[in-house]
Image 1 (tube, one colour):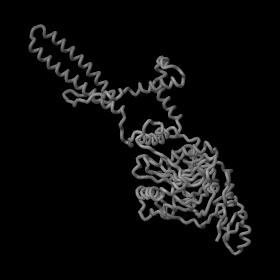
Image 2 (image 1 turned 90 degrees about the vertical axis):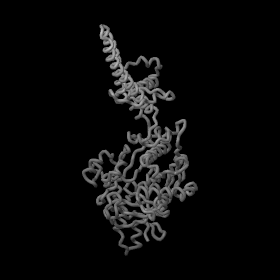
Image 3 (image 1 turned 90 degrees about the horizontal axis):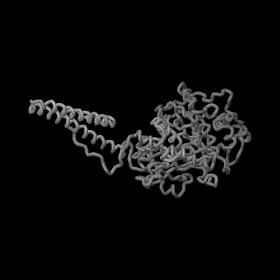
Image 4 (image 1 turned 45 degrees about the vertical axis):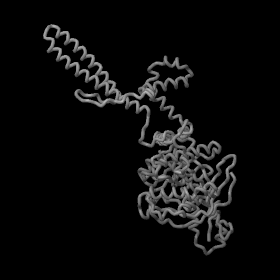
Amino acid sequence: MATCDHSVVEYFPGNDGHHCGYCGSDNTNCSHGMWAHTMTVEDYEQLVYRGWRRSGCYCYKPTLSIACCPMQTIRMDAPNFSISKSQKKVIKMVNRYLIHGIKKGESSSDHEACVRDLHHNETKRSSQVLADLDASSLRLKGSKKQNESGDSISVKHKTESTAKTSLTEDKQSAEVASEHGVATARKGKTYKPGVGLDPNKPKCGKAKLIRLEKKKKKLVVESSVSEDQTDSVSTAEISPSNSKKMLKRENERKSVEEYLAEPEKAESVAHKLEIKLIRSCPPSEEFLSTFRKESYKLFKRYQMSIHKEPENECTLRDFSQFLVESPLQHIPGDKKLLTGYGSYHQHYILDGKIIAVGVIDILPHSVSSVYLYYDPDYSFLSLGTYSALREIAFVRELYKSSPDLRYYNMGFYIHSCRKMQYKGQYSPSYIACPEVHTWVPIEKCRPKLDAARYCRLEEDPTIEDEEGKIDLNAVLILQNGTLLNYEKYHMLNPSRKDQSEIEEYAKLVGRTCSQRILLYRR
C-alpha cells in the first residue's frame, strides 16, 4: 500500500480528570490528548493498538490505572467470527420484519393459526360428546320408568354401552385436546362453538413429524439416496433427538452472511433495506447531498431521544466536528481494495429513508467502528447489534480481497460497566494488555477484571513493552515548517524546558509512531 505524507499532531500535556459518562463521576475519567492535524491510516491504526481513539480530529488515550471506568481496547478476528444464538435471533427478527413486515412480538404464523383453529374444533367436539353423554343419561332414566317389565334390563345394557362409547370418545377427545394444550370441557359447562379449520390454509402437522421429514430430506442430500430408500430408515436414526442435533449442526454451519442474505433470496419482501458505503472525509458528492437534510437531522433526533442531550448541544457544528471531520488521509481504492482507506459513513436505507448511520474508519489491517446513530422509531430492530454484525460481515468481505485486513475494532470495552460489556460477546475477541499492549483472549481477561479494575492482562511476565523503549533523540518534531529530530530541536532551543513533555508523548504513542509522526511545536 502506498504511503501518504507524514502525520502531524499537537500534544496537550496533563492528565486532568473530567466527567465520566458511564458512572456519572465528575472528575475521575482521566486521559491524555492530542490534536491530529493530519494522519496516515497506518499511524492511526498503530495508535489504536496502543489504546488511542479519535473523536473527530481529537485523539485521546485513557489513563486506565487511575480511571473510574477503565476503557480497554478490544478487537475481534472477523474471519473466525462465530455467531451466537442471541445474535442469530437479532438477524432473524430483522429479516422477519423485512420479509413479512412483522415487528418483534407480533405473529402471523400459519402454524399458530392452525393450532388455534384446532383448539376451537377439539373444544367443540369435546363439548358435544359430553352433551351426548348427558342426553344418554336422561334417556336411561326415562326408559327405566316406562319399562317396568323384564325388558328394562336390556335397555339398561344398551344405555350403558352407549355411555361407555361416549366416555371412550370423550377420553380420546380429552387426550387430543390435552396434546394440543386445550383445556378439557367440564360437565355442565357450555362452550361457544369454534369456527373450525380454514380450508384455504395448509394442514398442520405435529412438530415431531415435521422434524422427521426434515431429517429424511437431509438424508437424501447427504447420503445421495432416494426418497423411497429413506422410508426404510429406522425410527432410531430419525428420532427427535437425532433430528434436533442435525438441525443444530445445520445452523452452526450457516455463516453470518447467509443469515443476512435471507431477505435478498426471498421471492418478495415487505421492506427493502439497502446499505451504502459513502466517503465522509473528504466528503463525496453523495455524502454532501444527505449531510444536512437527513444525516444531521437523524443524529439530532438520536442524541436528544436516546442520550437525552439538550437541543443546543446537538448543533450542525457539533455533528461535523464529532462525526464528519477526520484527520485520516484518504487513499483511493485499487484492485486490491476497491473501497479505499480512510473515513466513511454506512447508510442504512429502509424503503428509501435513512434509518441508521454507522461511522467507520477503514485501516490497513482493520475496520474501526467510531459511532452509530439511528432513528429512535426503529429501536425495535436492535440496530446496535444488527449494525455490528453487518460491519463484521463487511470486514469479512474486505478480507477476501485483502487478507491483511481481518480485524474489527469495536472501540473500548468497559468491564465495570454492564451496558458496555456487550462488545465482548462477539467471538473471538481480544483485549490489549494496558502495560505491554499484547492481545489477550477475552475469556482469560474476565476473571482478572472481575478481581481488579486495572491489572496486567498478559500472563507471560517476561514480555515487555518494546514500543515503550523510545529513543528521545529520534523523535520527529515540526517547528516553523522545518522537520527536525529532537536532538537538533534541543540544540536550536536550549532554553525550552519541554524534554519531559516530549518524552511523555513519545512513550504514549510508542517508538514507531514517535519516529514517523511529526510533533508540532510552536
